[in-house]
Image 1: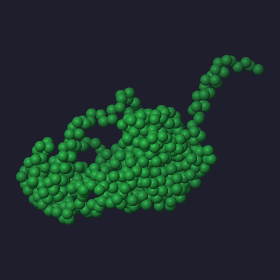
Image 2: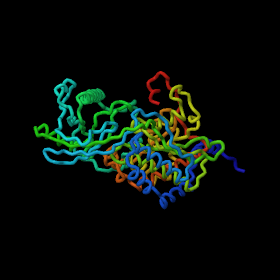
Image 3: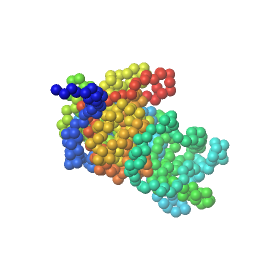
Image 4: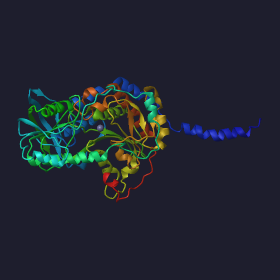
Length: 520
Ligand SMILES: [Zn+2]
């Protein structure tokens, strides 16, 4: 027998772990095939999209319309055959409920012109149909407001324009190029610089000035405040800070820059401008932020209490139907659950869907979930949900297809996602970046070090449309949503079957006296 040379042992000794490591992340390709074929032939994305946008309409946090959406989604979950469907109140909501019941806005002099408008949420109603001359509030300082003292009672007040229109040479809709995706994977060693060159001081001054003007207008008894927000004659939605039980704020509406600008320029040229407006808003109790949840229960006696969580926010602004922001995420997550249920998976861990409320006002729903199930907000003691938490996948960047995933600095999970996304390379979804992405519900979990991720998504028309009247069914790209549902279903299944939970970042108990604890 020929003697085996030492170097052969060394090669085996050193290379074996490499092979072993490379093969430790199994991917059930038969399940990938099944899910893919199912979604290609029996997708219900189109149908769910209709119900979640045209049928449900806007879903402002704590509104009556949101309550209707909660019921609808819970019933849909039951229709899908999911278990433990529940509307789960998690946090008090001090603004209370608010629903717009009527909005009619027109300029009547120097000629008639109806305008697209959206009321500012949590502001009051006009006293029926009001008509009158429009007064431009021309001020740069609090002192300059004084000149209007005693002149605004019952008047329609045009706030000075805060934005001007600049032509854009960007395409209306876009997808990531290969170069852009490559750029996203690079990491900068610069420290936390969340707001870039944002001028906080100017922002603070503008806000204080606005607040002073708002108080002044209440004291003077103005009938209506007209703001400028949005462009292309598409007003943008937003909300006033208001606490339920306080006196109803003066009614306020947003017009797009074009309509607002026209009236401002007319007044500046000494042309008398008149408007007629009727706004009717209902305030209601709406005391809680609710999440809507359902499950496919786990079956492994050791792992069934562990949770693979997926979600998106069900609440929206009130102007459009919150299609891209964020019915799209809800539709994808609902379809992913439906696929898994229809295929008849028996997951080892429990798979849970949570459609959050109150995201737009500050991630209330997902933070409330953390407080209720994962960490006590007062004592900061961890609850059983912390150890039972495996992973959370969130979608909230519009209707565009997944192009990869943000690791949120969790390098430990990279090899797992590399293996899991490999079957989707031909669909353009294989970019993995160490970077963070922010602004939505995965942050509620990520702040505790838990594995919680958002996908890199093609922009499509998201930036132009979200929070505006044009965020409707038409903004949804059905094929992209189908692809996202399919990939979500695969990742969720693989996470539910994995021997180990996904690696978390080290948990650091926050200093109870620090500012941060108030946030979570
Ligand atoms: Zn959103």
